[in-house]
Length: 371
Image (cartoon, rainbow, N blue to C red; front, side, top):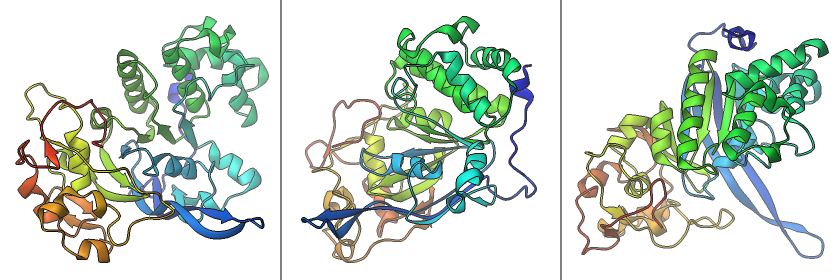
């Protein structure tokens, strides 16, 4: 076993029942400015009051359509994106309150794997230089020992030592993503935020990268926040799942519970657009959601999902959906769901026929949201 594998993260675990990551009331708003003087006339609420906890050694999957706010949450956790309000705590340490040298030291404990394995790597540096840089920045390994540590990291992610002399352009997409993973684990973090790390890869390569992340989690005791569009991938790797829509979490809970008994109509729509993992599993009738996700600078009143909600239509368009924003609450099958009529979702899930809109049967691409 290599030195990289045996090194323990520096985050304190003095409180065994305290979550490793706690995101409380997270808001990331962007000002809308117009006119010659560029006065602020509104806000784009990219992330609005997001809450979740993650335990050590576990994986939280975050799913939702493009524009739901998933990547903004990821960037806020690692402090790439400034936080408007709320708190992001890593082992009790408020990352949002840190600056300068304190923030740099804290960033050793939370790393990120980016969606684009080529754009996230410096094309002017060799792989060896890319992996040696974080070791130098955080003072982890003296200069004379960095070459050996780089070789260990490459071996750990399934690459050969001679890859250290290559440039990113000389590698395949899967190899580049492995380099990105090696860079993330180089500083021995406690938490890695994975922002759609396999979405740009071929299907066969996706499986290899997912298996690599699973192995590294088991060997190094890592925790993941795993963002993805592909619900099958999330089910394979995650312990818990949070479903986001228009900057908010609309449903969360253990993966198997949410996938087997979704309580929010948006979650049902997402699952209906994904092929079942098991060949013998029953396929849901596909739900076709009208329109597109609304703009976060002009969100709908009441429930943000109500203009596209198939359940609301089935229930006769109750006015409460337009008037009041539902709060997260516990229902059967889900620990938290934001829907006024979540208890009635199961009455219509998997029961519609192709003759009745907006539920239609038919093939759909794996992992995509109905649209």
